[in-house]
Amino acid sequence: MRDDTEDPNYLMANERMNLMNMAKLSIKGLIESALNLGRTLDSDYAPLQQFFVVMEHCLKHGLKAKKTFLGQNKSFWGPLELVEKLVPEAAEITASVKDLPGLKTPVGRGRAWLRLALMQKKLSEYMKALINKKELLSEFYEPNALMMEEEGAIIAGLLVGLNVIDANFCMKGEDLDSQVGVIDFSMYLKDGNSSKGTEGDGQITAILDQKNYVEELNRHLNATVNNLQAKVDALEKSNTKLTEELAVANNRIITLQEEMERVKEESSYILESNRKGPKQDRTAEGQALSEARKHLKEETQLRLDVEKELEMQISMRQEMELAMKMLEKDVCEKQDALVSLRQQLDDLRALKHELAFKLQSSDLGVKQKSELNSRLEEKTNQMAATIKQLEQRLRQAERSRQSAELDNRLFKQDFGDKINSLQLEVEELTRQRNQLELELKQEKERRLQNDRSIPGRGSQKSESKMDGKHKMQEENVKLKKPLEESHRLQPHPMDEQDQLLLSEKPQVCQLCQEDGSLAKNVCKNCRGTFCDACSTNELPVPSSIKLERVCNPCHKHLMKQYSTSPS
Image 1 (cartoon, rainbow, N blue to C red):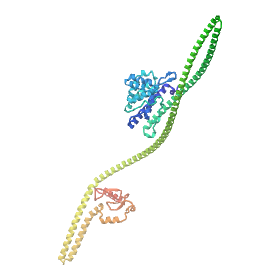
Image 2: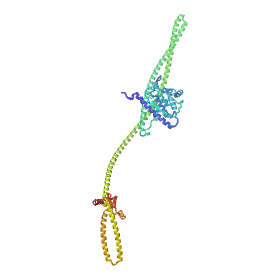
Image 3: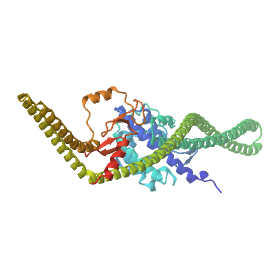
Image 4: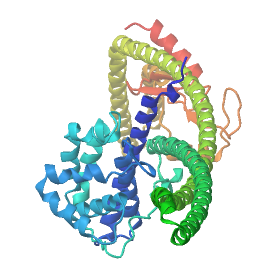
């Protein structure tokens, strides 16, 4: 089965794609550099020269070869001459090109035409008009040439952007016939560090396309060199053959000259003998003389023919020598082009190795980042599990809090009325005690005054004093009973002295006997000092319906008291 890479149609399509990519790069680079430069371009501007070289390669692609005496000739001047028939404005350019004195080859005329069309800013219009006439181009191009396919229309559309460029060329002193049309790829090759992200892949693709085009162009040049070498060998053989024929012709000419000399001698001898001899012999000698003259005439005509043939052979030899010189010059140019292309290919290979190294380093970086991502994912999963556990604990704490609030509400509902009644009773008893103390004090003062006013009633005074004392004691007993009950349920607030004494003492938990390094809390019921572990509960104390921190013994005592006492 035949390989697709050896198919001529595949090779031509690949060449068309490579030339189109090069045209895109050349036009884009020319526009960007010209806009940055900000002045009129001349023939010495390197991007402009490369643009004309690329256009020349595009116009030469798929040209039909015309056979001449010196071999096959491919020139794109023929298709460009058709433009004046399609667009009348191009006639002025064609006439100017034909009037230029320094142009001797069709290639030079085609190059001058491209420069004048660019100066006129109508190169895109002329190319579109030429590409639209496929029936006229079929005389000059193969069916699968670039100018016959859609790539030519794309390049013609890209040429519209060149209308923003101002160019000025001087054609008189410029040698357009002998210029070497080699594409300098170093102007379009870019380093991988100049771009990041998604541009790196596009540059690699462009570089690979350029590399493929260079390889195709190298194979094409090798084939051209082989053909030229074969032509040189054929010309050398024909030259050798012509040299041999020339030597034979020279030998024949020398032989004819010798025969002429001999015939002249014979004719002169016959004439002398005729003069001396009788008249009878003259007739026979006259016939021989006429035959000799006829033979001499034939020999002279033959000599003239040989001389003409010799002149023709000499002119052909001169033409062959000229063709050999031109072929040698062409071979030297091709060799120089091959050297530059090999150098560019080496640059491409070096850039390819550099890109491969960068690709490996980027792969290593991606691998390290993937490992880091995996570790981060593991940590994320662990944190998610921890968050789930914390959420579960939070839900449990929320349920505990809700249950505690519910218990607190139930506790308030059960003991709120009792606490309020007890507080009212305590206040009433306190008020009665204060009133009785006030009355007692008034009674003491009154009795003291009576004793002073009546000194003879000492015994009565002592007896009445004893009776009053007994009565006061009984009343105090009666008052202390509810007060003691309320004292057990109501904590006494600490005054400033107690707080000062408590702050001066070392804070040691009264239950677990821990030292003062830990945080301590004061029980709101018994005013004792306890650590956090021994005072974790909160209950409403008799002095307040709010939840207050109490120690564990007070908590048990209050819960037991609240549960046994009637509501």
